[in-house]
Image 1 (cartoon, one colour):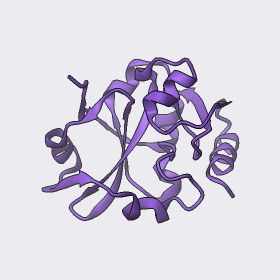
Image 2 (tube, rainbow, N blue to C red):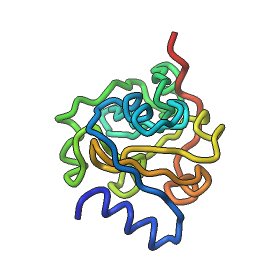
Image 3 (cartoon, one colour):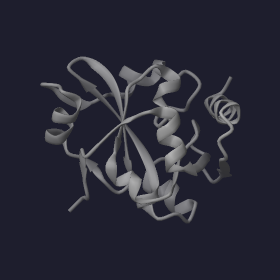
Image 4 (cartoon, rainbow, N blue to C red):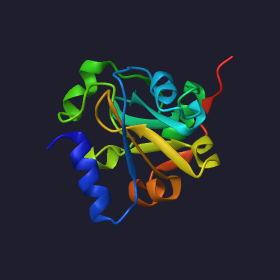
Length: 157
């Protein structure tokens, strides 16, 4: 089962309303937001990190960047760094590398959601491919994923 279908099945089983969108192939979260005509702040990007040797998923607004000092505190780790593609690609065998949804719970990964995501009622995110996105209520995302919600990002600049 492809990542998109896995996620759609999961959402339907939990009776969570969602929408899917299809767009031209793009690779960065900001490009996806632009192709969907969605403010970058409403588009959720996934950043994979290694915290004290363990893989973790961070979800934050597309234009934001991870503040690694804050991330260390939130993850309770001495060392936090960006994961390289080769360190996480096999965890998501049904997704395009770099196009994972923030539903790390479907892959037995801890998920950390930056509290800036809660500022919007709806979130948008990649759905396992570089050409598909989904949107749903932020409250439904929190209910299903049960992420640790904390502040670990900052606006660039």
